[in-house]
View 1 (tube, helix red, strand yellow):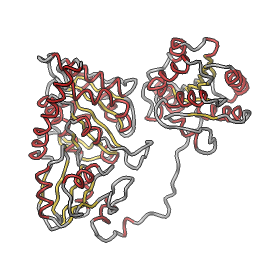
View 2: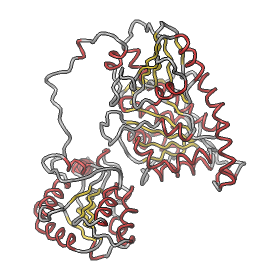
View 3: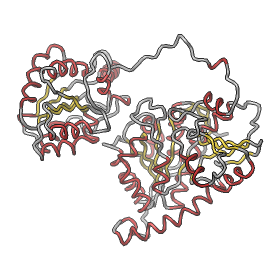
View 4: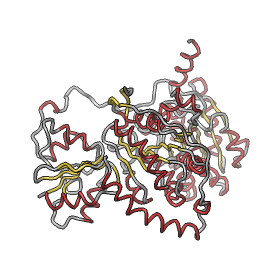
Length: 530
């Protein structure tokens, strides 16, 4: 009898990858993808097999390292949240051109409604753009099975496979039936060495091959067990990924619609054409952007049959839910789903005792001494400095943008231009911006708020721990303008003095307030007592 486990969607992917025989998982922590790597890090099977599972500096380095694993014939999983795909895009898109040898699966966890993100982008567009197959499970069981199947498909087609989850799938639990794990691949090398060297002469040949692969990829999606055509009434529904669950939740006694469940891409055109011919209208359900709806309108719809986010039947932004699906289906509201008047929204806030609080307290005070001071911030716990009571920051765009935006503002004449960035974000994407600033002798003050961890996603290791001063000095920041302070109330006078001195210095200066994250400190103290 096969083992069963009650697990998250993220954990189902992790187990699927382990049971597919991976040799490594490569990732940078980002909600809602973090639990995949953490599960593998804690897995006895992974330890027994020596599966590599340390955190990477950013998503691009993760993608490239995994591609190196594939190069030697072994299997690797890459994990990131949707905005991490932007960072990994150079390597990801070109990995379709090199192709794979060992299986390579890229897991992108999208965040509709932006629960912990700065946009709602849909990673399926990256898969279509790179011309690689895409899997989008509708259940945790499918997440487990699809991950295993994705590695097989990657090796069969010699292409990476993009696997897409959304927040609700990643962070909800279900019982999953497991299959016996396979052994990892042995070391081997591709017979075609030229495709791994993307000189134009090789890339042009590979591009033709990838285009020719598209016909077979579409044929596979049309016969895939993950894509199912279920005949019903004259109204049709295309349900993608988790949207299939939401659809069926509204029809506990059986669905009276014709349904096409889509969980493998490219889009299966034949069943879509059949639905267009047989149905009076088609509602497209997809969690994220109108990826499928837009393609159907462009490829097949000449009658106005296609309904969805673009036509207004579903909200244009935010998560898909059983309730807004129910409304789009024309079903009556359920009284049980009325919003509770006693639930009061609670915005996030910096933890009591967090060192970032001390940084913003003094930084606000010093910044007010200057008429045009602006504080450019970045992505991490410290982004909460934008909220009351601090209201300290003026920008947060993407990983690493604080330093380069401060530099650009200073280039245009702003003084003082101050950047606030965390230790993990600095090594992820801030180093190159600081090098630009040093090379141009920009008049900026950079505050690297170092809490000795990647705190926002739960306290994972930070690549820069113990190295920040050396990195800054190696880039070329002058030694006397790399200053370390301890952000505590008793040190406020010293921190004020250091900030004023470095703001007044005409050039690049770095101030490093360093104190361990209060949450990881509690954890470490508890571990020390046990």
